[in-house]
Figure 1 (cartoon, rainbow, N blue to C red):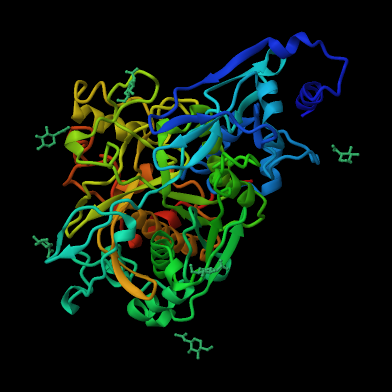
Figure 2 (figure 1 turned 60 degrees about the vertical axis):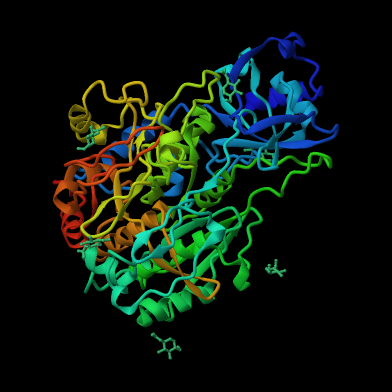
Length: 590
Ligand SMILES: *[C@@H]1O[C@H](CO)[C@@H](O)[C@H](O)[C@H]1NC(C)=O
Ligand SMILES: *[C@@H]1O[C@H](CO)[C@@H](O)[C@H](O)[C@H]1NC(C)=O
Ligand SMILES: *[C@@H]1O[C@H](CO)[C@@H](O)[C@H](O)[C@H]1NC(C)=O
Ligand SMILES: *[C@@H]1O[C@H](CO)[C@@H](O)[C@H](O)[C@H]1NC(C)=O
Ligand SMILES: *[C@@H]1O[C@H](CO)[C@@H](O)[C@H](O)[C@H]1NC(C)=O
Ligand SMILES: *[C@@H]1O[C@H](CO)[C@@H](O)[C@H](O)[C@H]1NC(C)=O
């Protein structure tokens, strides 16, 4: 902390005791080529301000990494021994301070004039305009003084051009049970399903058919007062309480009194007007709460910054709502034990250092006993924005090479990534995002827990298949999958059919919440980071999906096979329950 303040006081010209040479002896920290959709628009107006987040190097991260390997391994004697919030800070070697840090104390946040930020970082900010008209302020490279270089991990917003895009970009209307192709979220089609197809996941996905398919029928929750499930909402997606009631009246009348807590973060809203009901938010809330009922649900509506007007100057938007949500959730002593998120963006738009920081924060939540599920994306191995045969899938590193396009945060090894299936018997949905990260986030190339499963898949695939298109040493995702086509959801008081891995993540999360219920009732700690358990024991308890593929980038993508194949399979609750109850916390003898 002290280093930063010395630097800041120096940069503001208040400290005269520092050698002024240092201002100009900056060392390049990072440089990027902006994605093609962004164009330089103008220089920032004089007097504009910017909120910088300064990520301090965290020398204790490897301690936490060791720790999570032990507590998430069902065969380790420390399995399930999660950390409380203050224990977690202690692992980081952090004592109580009152500097202006994020609650996890891993970032310093400071708002200052852009002109000063430019001086500090030896760079020039520009206003950039996206093809769709949005503006942002970013720079393509920045420098740090030599004496701070190794103490600061990264500073944002600088080079990050990522925008959270809604995962649920693939919507279908059905006619005679045939998908008619993708359309935009706003073009939802009102459907009137015939009564005979109501309880058959092959045609229309409802709570009833999911409960049969994933084997939760008859399970009685007994620890729900100590359990909860969270759903994150971004991009002005509002969860409508009236729609939740209509959904339950339609699909589970016994849950008519289900309650949804709403928490507003960073200026988020949750407008209850019917025309503001969000398709994504309603889908997430209705199915996650429906499957885990009566487990209490929490919806987090995290606001972005106000739209940035380049001609007004004022404060620029940081467009990093994940960070704001993480700040909030870290400050909580008892966050929900299962949290589902259906948003993401192409990994390559998130600078590797930023992705790593965010991923490490997800790891820390896992270490505190929270299971995080994320949708794997709706673009197959590609970008999903056009016919897979014509996708170019170009890298944005200035080389324009064709590569599969992994999606972050699913590509983070410390989250549980959920892909999509369709039909009965289940096959991989063609849009299901899946592949391999290009980033190295853990101390290893591929996370330890999946190395064996993924190597078997790669052996079957062969050394030469797609060898230029993906990183065969990277974190492979998704980890599991669940139905993702034709979910019957209420939006603005009417039923719609919605498809996408946006549906799969809350579905899987609903099952995890029931598993946590079983563990809490048995006096066991919650599951926390789930992947090591899934890869070690999952074969016994997941339905392997062996048909289908996920085309993109002019290829047919990866084929579903036996074993991991993007994804281990879909849940069988009864079998999973047995496994999670067997994975007891080891009692130390003596
Ligand atoms: C907290 O802030 C107060 C006043 O701003 C200051 O006197 C004190 O030293 C600070 N404490 C720490 C631990 O930084
Ligand atoms: C599911 O629907 C498909 C047609 O969409 C049909 O071929 C298949 O037999 C159905 N499966 C079951 C189990 O009814
Ligand atoms: C919902 O709450 C009302 C009022 O407390 C009660 O009369 C009703 O039985 C409840 N319905 C269900 C399905 O629990
Ligand atoms: C909620 O949305 C409605 C419809 O768009 C709008 O008229 C109303 O002003 C909004 N309410 C708030 C508090 O923003
Ligand atoms: C990459 O492709 C874009 C759009 O097709 C083009 O504008 C750009 O000049 C290309 N860059 C290189 C290095 O070829
Ligand atoms: C996927 O399966 C099809 C049909 O069996 C086969 O032709 C193709 O080569 C396989 N592709 C990969 C990448 O394994």
